[in-house]
Image (cartoon, rainbow, N blue to C red; front, top):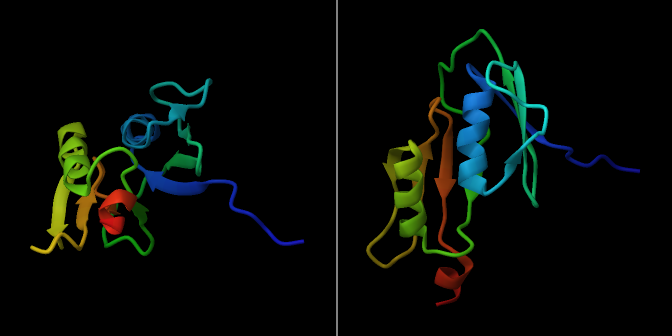
Length: 124
């Protein structure tokens, strides 16, 4: 028997606030018992669940692990604009003139993640 990933856990300053942001990003839902001020909050999605745990330490260096997002119903660039409107920040723009590449963003607490091209853009 092997192990499976139950959820990905992220340390953060405000578990509920960051979970609300990621629920919007991923179209997920928060755990029924999650409330503002809770030290933990869970975001459930069809793919993977994210668990946010409040810690006293601030983020000081680049993530050693990050999420790569692939838009499902829009282009990469449309998704980047949507995420910026939600409060994300563009950290690195690796999009190329030929349409390839990705954008590196950070969430509202500075955790980096990437937005890749959609499957439709890769096929085209």
